[in-house]
Image (cartoon, rainbow, N blue to C red; front, side):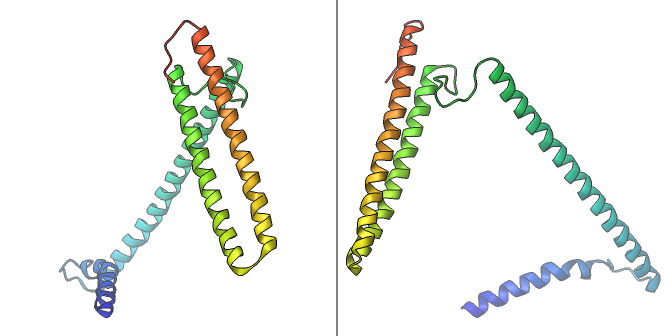
Length: 180
């Protein structure tokens, strides 16, 4: 079965690579002169193809540069208006408090997923170290688990603090109803 699949792939590759070679003549005779003109056409097409590719690359680079400049201008404008992306600022990504709250929820979910993934890895390492009788590794893993748990709790408390500030700001700003 494997030989058949392999041979099918080889045949497909040969047809794909050699197909243009068989189709070049187009059934027309013409001797050697036709071949020479085809070679010239091929060389000019290759040169023009490389030029077109270079121009596309230049255009792409220019577009990237324009986008980068626009992004920098947007950041500068936001900083001038006092809407910088500092960690301590309450201003979220959206104009409404609901968008900010959803952003906090997403951040909490990401942090929880990272914490679970790290904890699972460390527990697996601890179990393997226990089975092999390596007590030093078990102690180190226990320390890392405690450190990870503390880190996760600090992150969650910081996120909840920011969330509470946004909720309070929403209540103070005009009595908007904000879902929790």
